[in-house]
Image 1 (spheres, rainbow, N blue to C red):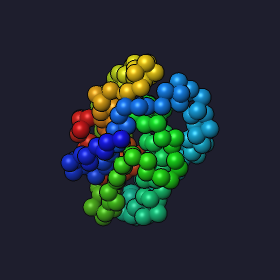
Image 2: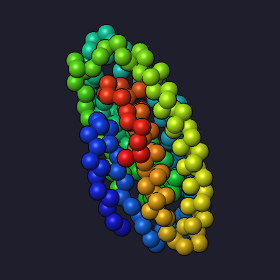
Image 3: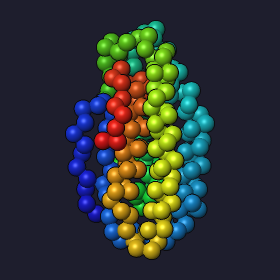
Image 4: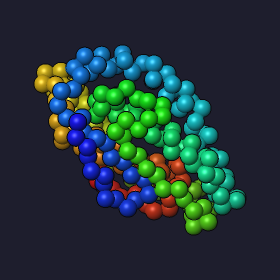
Length: 197
């Protein structure tokens, strides 16, 4: 397994993933849709309860108190790390079954914001300002699904996941993370770049 260099991005939300390379586990790849069921139940339970817990209270804290409690930030970051590990496992980027607390070659960092430096009114419209990103990410997600399906066959027949497939899926995930940090986690006022890097 080779390690991917950390991206040199200065954006306050960063993601890099170790490249798994050759000798992928064909058996777990073949049955990935089945092996993912137990952790999918955990993710679904968290998603059901976390939607309003992650966004609304933080929005209200920034708006009325200009605070972003550190414990809330830490929870949001850990939730993002876990859900990203899950998505990358499902997307065949890694063979490591998603851990709820270990890094597993998925390096996700979000800078803790100084709430006094954040525009207190911007959280009310960030989700609207991010609409161009939603459109771009919708198209890229469809392409990612096609890449994952092709990658599934490539792994089954060759045991390898092409580096280009890996880089593309990680790039889309990185872009999604930056939009999430901007529009929903509210950790930055810096508009996300339209980039896979």
